[in-house]
Image (cartoon, rainbow, N blue to C red; front, side):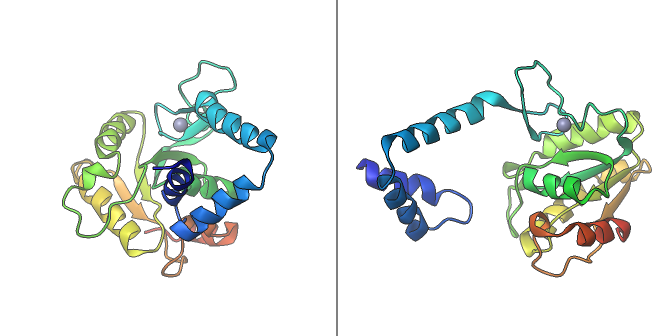
Length: 204
Ligand SMILES: [Zn+2]
């Protein structure tokens, strides 16, 4: 495969990008001077070198040259350790943070489970979540909030997590669902602060 087609293939893998848009990106890059593409390459390299995954919530955070394995949220003693919001992606976590109405901790699943999928564990960090909840219960966790977008696959993911955590329900853990002030089809990522605040307040 030539480099033109290879790059189209790579961009087509990006979320929300189809082959036609991918081709536009490649033509765009061809109009740019070498300094631009050089900077793009360095930025991509640095992205991997300067970030790491939190060992507790699995969100991606900036290393800033430090040796920390916990992100700033997990290492913040002022956060409410009795609440754990389970989200699909980092971008959902960021939306909740930006809303300013949530002070608990998070767990990033790293994906969504498509409807009718026979092997859900392939898509999300289910074993890690189970282990994490088990440990957190010892540390005072009382409620898990399923913070999913309002579309079929995300709701399916919420149901999967709900079933996964059944053994902890029997031990008194509350599992709540973000209130549906979010209308059907709403991506958590694109919800405004007021909507998220209401959805948190109205969780059941
Ligand atoms: Zn963390």
